[in-house]
Length: 510
Ligand SMILES: *[C@@H]1O[C@H](CO)[C@@H](O)[C@H](O)[C@H]1NC(C)=O
Ligand SMILES: *[C@@H]1O[C@H](CO)[C@@H](O)[C@H](O)[C@H]1NC(C)=O
Ligand SMILES: *[C@@H]1O[C@H](CO)[C@@H](O)[C@H](O)[C@H]1NC(C)=O
Ligand SMILES: *[C@@H]1O[C@H](CO)[C@@H](O)[C@H](O)[C@H]1NC(C)=O
Ligand SMILES: [Zn+2]
Image 1 (cartoon, rainbow, N blue to C red):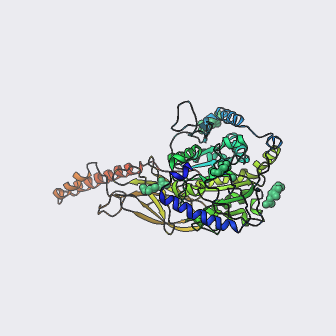
Image 2: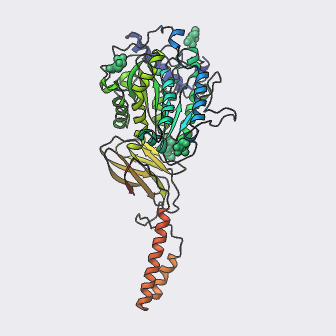
Image 3: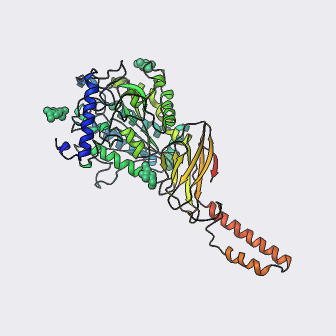
């Protein structure tokens, strides 16, 4: 009620029409509640995303099966998880940190749950906590309190990387070339309460701002767990991510919601890229791609069943981050003794998905030609209505792309001339740097067109006076000019360049 009264009139209106639509849809269908949502828990948005499902899918009934003591045996409690995180941080201190962001000094986390449990995040990198011109990936587990497999696997993943760094090539690549952030549980309260929603019984995967419907736009009503994720994403500049769920075996990709609230394939601008990423996961999995239910083990969220206020679409639209929603086990609570096997089934998928953010796509840095400073420019692919931004710190950008394609890449920045170039992406990543000239600068783009603050100008002017004098003197001058040119060139090349060991196939500068 409090929520309703504070909604702006147009929000209330769109909610009303949604309610009507949903009621219409619901009246003709049996109520199926599904993995990513659709339970009737949330009075606020429970009506969205509950309409329909593939015929065979009944992940849980209206009445959820009781989660018994027996089922939870062997799973980490929240305090055991905290201990596992701290133990990891101690053991693997030189390639990780457990970090805090913007909150009280004593709390090392990105935020807290409703009941005050810190949201612990592990960062794995050879330079944890430092900014580098490298892409970042995030894994989030246990978004739904009653889906605990993800939180277990994420702790196993962190430990596996620590154990295999410098021994396994994928582990080494990830530690060296990626900043991997792992939040084992986004919903510790729901986990403790043995239910899907958080302590306020809100489904966190319905709590994000939505592109079509504005039921979550009131900031004061946003759940602290959701807010923590949103702040974190704005802070960190993630290239890609995945959240882990349970109750099915499939890699789900955007869009999750449709504008008309009906269930149908709804492709986002990067549909091809997302299908590639989802396929990387399903094909690397023990048997996800063999699914009889989902072709290739992947599915478009809106085609499965539309949801609104989900984390996945929000990440792509507002976070510049390519997020998948991974359903990693058919049962939500497999016996804890099966967890090592489930980890083995998912291990290569998780590693390959993280590694894909350096092994594919186009990467590079953007600089201002006049100052050599990095630019937080926007990078656009012709034909794809989506912007990836370079970072403020290094001007590095990391653009996921499906392999084997010809792409026209454009970098643009207000105040600078836009530049474009075509690249052919095969199976490896392409490295492509941009140097942008100031707007209104008539020079044809050239590395050496600007930024000369050595004595060359003076020398050039001297040329006129010296015309006609002795040949030796003239040659000497030419040599001087050439040296000056070399000096400038050296200066240009001093731009720190983005490099990744296994990924860069070739370097281009435009
Ligand atoms: C939903 O709202 C109704 C009436 O406002 C209330 O009785 C019920 O407890 C609420 N359910 C949940 C799960 O919050
Ligand atoms: C971390 O420690 C191990 C073992 O001492 C060492 O081999 C490795 O080089 C260190 N890694 C980094 C990134 O410092
Ligand atoms: C995958 O393997 C597990 C364990 O053998 C089995 O329970 C599950 O049904 C299999 N799923 C598919 C899609 O083959
Ligand atoms: C990227 O930059 C543009 C232009 O500055 C901005 O409008 C947009 O919000 C940025 N995108 C992200 C994901 O930060
Ligand atoms: Zn879920």
